Image (cartoon, rainbow, N blue to C red; front, side):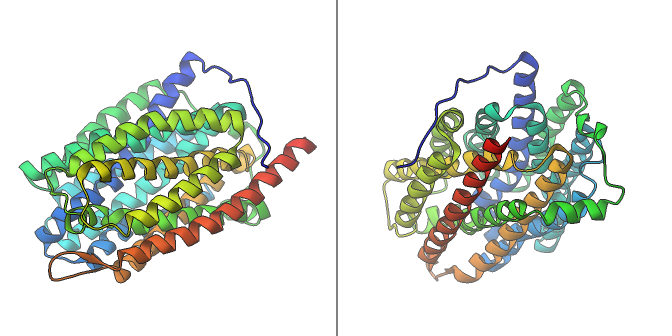
Length: 413
């Protein structure tokens, strides 16, 4: 049997609560920018007269550019105040989102997604570095749980509103609304977040490329990077085509699609912080194991569905996302403790880069696996489910190894 431990939770200070709220908002904006591509896929594909392959390229364009950007910035990620670095990339992300809203063709949208990815793909890694710098290990499960509620909030607030706006106007409006809303949040972050520069007081390598190399070559860093890539692959295969699958295969019309995301998001908003607390109290691997089992079972069922009542789909979708969160939160809490402070920015940037690159490849592969029949139904979608099970099993093995090594390092310290 797996041994679990119970730890007394350390309360957040007032400033730490503000920081968590701001970081969660930034995650909300970045995640929503990617997430709305999925439900808007059912609108964008006919509007631009493109198929699943072309839409897979739109999704992967963001991922590939974000991956390249992460690798290019990794060597410099620990050489600056993390607040200044965050605001620089967030400004570029907002401008890229505006471009997406103004795009009038498939080619223009692809270029806009590339620009957005160059800036937006780095933000998540900086958020993780800041949260690790400012919060002790015993708090990180709760911090990751709260920050990941941004994912759920994007479903509760962002995705239904985006679908509503696109149904009543067009698919451009959600991007422009996100840019305006994101700008206001960015101004609050610029005002309230204090400099995050404690790592600058420690010895720094002169060459950013040497810093990148020394971060990559660490064996347990490589294990974490491989785990990140596996965790991302399944999700990026499934998510981009979910709205088209729900509408065309499961028989849920566009008018009820926001309800699916709304109710699922509400469930995960409550589940995220709870999973974070359990992770801090019971240990990271037991929670990850639970999430992996739930995810594999629900994904296989989901990808084999035929016509289904709305209520049944909502229940299944909510359970599936609880499983996904039960993998994401403990893994992020575990990965946050792996690098030392002087390599934290580079480690997170490389991890985010690999996440995006793996996701981009997964989106392209999924676009070639999934095809659209004459009746609009997506075919071969069940293959995506099997591939997600395979990546889940691989990531489970790697997380077990990482957790055991972390325990050894803690005992040695």
